[in-house]
Image 1 (cartoon, rainbow, N blue to C red):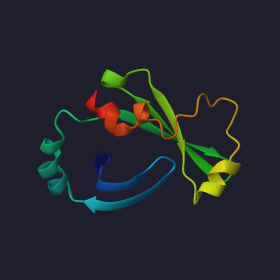
Image 2 (cartoon, rainbow, N blue to C red):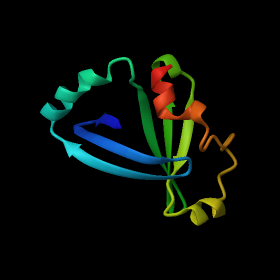
Image 3 (cartoon, helix red, strand yellow):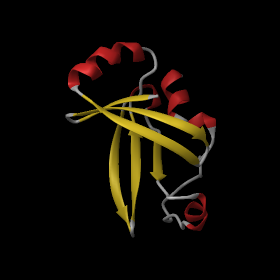
Image 4 (cartoon, helix red, strand yellow):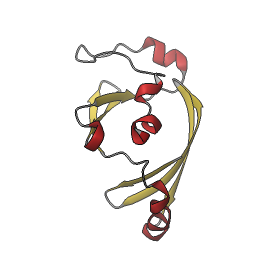
Length: 112
């Protein structure tokens, strides 16, 4: 479960599955709903800035982490299905593929 504030937008996301193929259900929240839920995330929070970079017909989401994960930068690309994912040719500036590696999951990063 993810609770997110991005600008004036507040949302709650439930993620199911593991690895490359995951289902997400996202619900918009009011500011009051967000503020009511926020204390429950104490000790399990991430701070990052997301940049959207156009790449052909796709968008690469680049997350630059702050706080205890300072220095970590992760790029993410969303696909309709696993076949599309396998066919993707990443740009030269991509580094190691960390897809499915628990060390880089937001849950683990938030708890360490």
